Image (tube, rainbow, N blue to C red; front, side, top):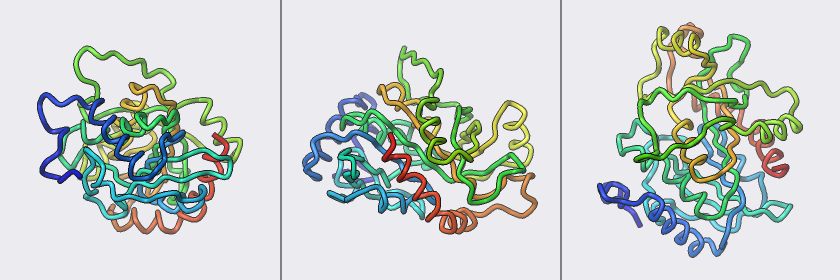
Length: 277
């Protein structure tokens, strides 16, 4: 069990891979599932997908697993769930995301992804609620992530670790998703540090350098997932249009409400995609 103020990842000489392996062993012991095939991180608005993927084998508090902390954000459930799909795959559902803006360091931000890889998962599905820059997008619309811009000025990679990020968000997996819903659009996700929302000028900067989606998660996790050898599928739920695109003030309450309204549709979509992976 890990307390938020006593985390082994915070030690200067910590080995994040070894701690992830220990966490994976905890998950195997607590769930009774030795190996997982797919992992999902469920962001704002995506939570109900866990109910539709298959049969829940076990649900455990994330704080009982080495390196995990209680989520700081409303809308994140703080549990790890092992689900068996109708096709017999074991899916690890992560409802305990640590955001970069919480100030715990990037090791903690990507610990869930490294742990998922250590459980055996070969596919990492990352979801989030985010702001849309394209004016044609509407709140409640899911879009695929085709690439990202990491504007955190940080990386989960340590030392001389060089990882190729070409096709980071797998074209193959995006094609599978579009085989389920051909209407899915896609765009480049831009991760800002947060926790403040972006200014209209920052949104225009993101647009000018190729961004279509703005948020505060996912990019760092995707890099760690690639380092760990996983294939990545990314989904954003457009909860609002970004600052300056949308003329009304932004609020976290708006994000939660948009997520709740869209949840039945996007959760069913995600469950069908996972079954097809």
